[in-house]
Image (cartoon, rainbow over all chains, first blue to last red; front, side, top):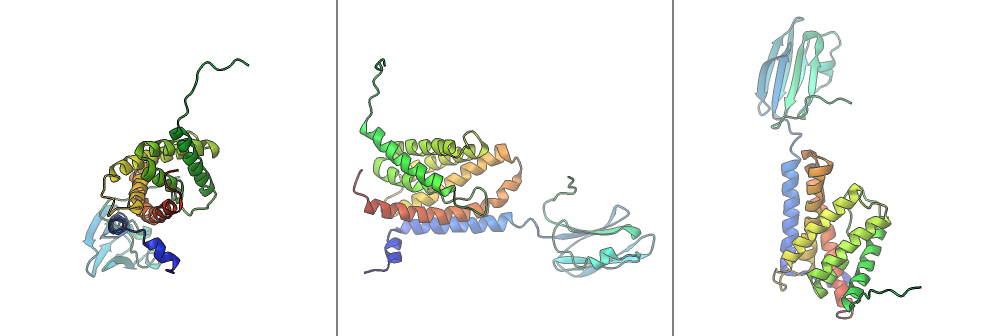
Length: 129
Length: 174
């Protein structure tokens, strides 16, 4: 006697396999297309609200911004970016560490510098409740 | 009591549709008790009956059974005219159209599993369309497309296999 699952599989016809594979391919395709939103592609540095630099996240570089307190240094690496050093008193933006998702922001308020990662599509810029 | 003056002729087809619809309603109500991790994802066990009716009695009777199932199930679950009802209805209508087209595929190569998977895709496409146009007018609903597609493939395949086995087990044309 054939095992039970063989009997079940015997119900599959050649076209059925085609439809199943096609459906799975569609699911994978949809996942790769639709779940890309969070990927960061650009790093944007602003000083007092004005854009100082916008660089692609595909090679390492450093951006300096001279604010009222001194120089804030932003480090960009492939796929991520961080505030390397900042003259501010509490160092919140430095302690945030590496940012790697689109929409992530590090703000060094005392020195009026902000670092923001951007995706390909514009994401929300404000949410309120 | 005054005897009724109208005589409703009940054909064997009516009995058949009623029986199949009853079975489909039972399955749909039973599956409503199965907890699912995501709203909108469910096995669609009632579609097993749809497939059997479609294969044995044709598309017209399948339409009857599906519509009766959608209306009766929503009444039983207290969802009639609630958003969930319109999602079910739109999904059912689109999947019926898909099934109507899919029956023209060569039977030698495309069995109940193909029909089931295609119908499941039709179901989620119809639901998503209504959800996008009416309930969630935002592109965000499409974020779940991969999940729905995967569920359609998995549950569509399982339902199709069950329907195929059921048709082997059932006496012919009853």
